[in-house]
Structures are given as structure tokens and as C-alpha cells.
Image 1 (cartoon, one colour):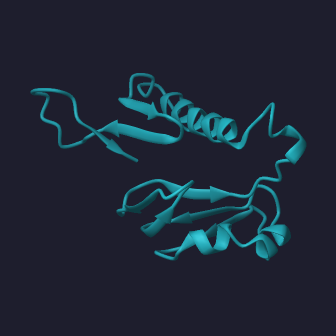
Image 2 (cartoon, rainbow, N blue to C red):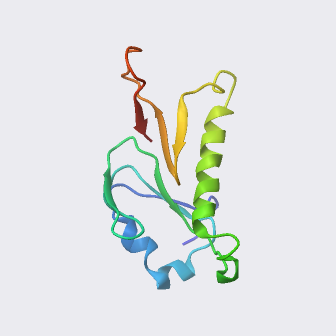
Image 3 (cartoon, rainbow, N blue to C red):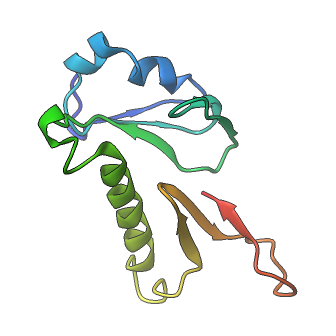
Length: 128
């Protein structure tokens, strides 16, 4: 499985069995990213579960993070840095994007202004 871009595009497939398979993960190159257009059975730490509708930005990226760094650079910190980088990428994409209504919810949920918000009442954000 070799890709010059280290990317695998998927469509409505369960990514959790892929990313939680240590034998398969050991064979994948760092940086390989799996994306999905729809997530039907998302699973996170603990008992967190979710469904992500079409239009959401969902991905898993292979990182080879040494156990020796767990105390000083925990994986959650890497997730937070990745989310910050995505927000930064959106707001610096081009002229006019610096005030794009996007925000981060700890640790890695990114929200943008709901495009159906009519400007009245409290601003509405949707998870991307």
C-alpha cells in the first residue's frame, strides 16, 4: 500500500477497526491519513461514540509516537496542535479569511458559523 501523498480516501467505512488494529498500523507509513465522507460508528477514548453526517471533516492520521515521550508530549497534545493547525490554515487561507467565523472546542473539535444563521439572535456554530 504505497501512495505518494500518503492518503487513503474512504466512503462510509468503519475507520475504528482500521485504526485500532495494531498489526495493520505497524505496516502503515507515518503520515498516512484516512478520511471519510460519513462516519456511522465513530469511537473515541473511553465510551465516546458518535455519528458524523456528510460535510463533516473526519480523518485519522498514522503517527509513530514513542512511548518515551508520553509524559512530556502526550498524544492529546498532538491532537490539539493538529486542530490548531487546521483553524490556522482556514484563517490564513487567503485574503478575507482572517475573520472567518471558526473556533476550536477542546481538544480537537472544530466549529464554523452555521451558514443558515440569519444574523439575528445568538450566533450558531456547527461542527466541521
